[in-house]
Image 1 (cartoon, rainbow, N blue to C red):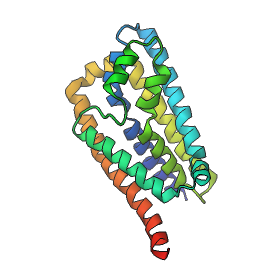
Image 2 (tube, rainbow, N blue to C red):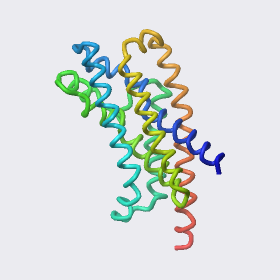
Image 3 (cartoon, rainbow, N blue to C red):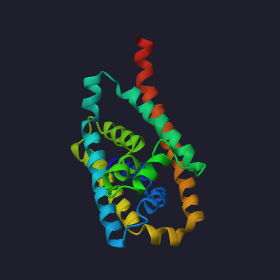
Image 4 (tube, rainbow, N blue to C red):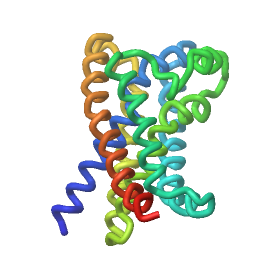
Length: 216
């Protein structure tokens, strides 16, 4: 029982952190806050991280209910979520900005806004389609399990958003320490792991959906 909980916690934390990927958000954050003082940057990072955490937690807790209302099977969503994650992961491996997360137009628009914490920083940069899909799929894996397994997924969301705040609040220092090359290496490594997570999501979805199709 304890080993299952630890395994779920580790998988959830790694999956959430790599798909939210606050390190790749550093250049965007610096570009959009280039006219802000350090205090304003920290406040923006805090509001964005908290908002992203709330959005991810709400979708994680209500995702299955939404699917039931819309008549979408969980297996179909796992495949769809896996495809979105795969697109993100391939962009990360190529170290190029992913249009699935944020576009150049959104970055330019954000640089001209007085408040970027909610849009586009929290959504869609941190809590975008890939991270929302990941939160829902991870929570779906706890169906029928003890309630503290759901707590492990929510804990992973909280830990990821706390790490996002620390990284973004010290974005200038992070970029100085790691450099563009260091950030690119970390992004490629995270992308490789995210490919494996995406494939696993698709395999889980197909294993749930194919038997029903064959029986039908």
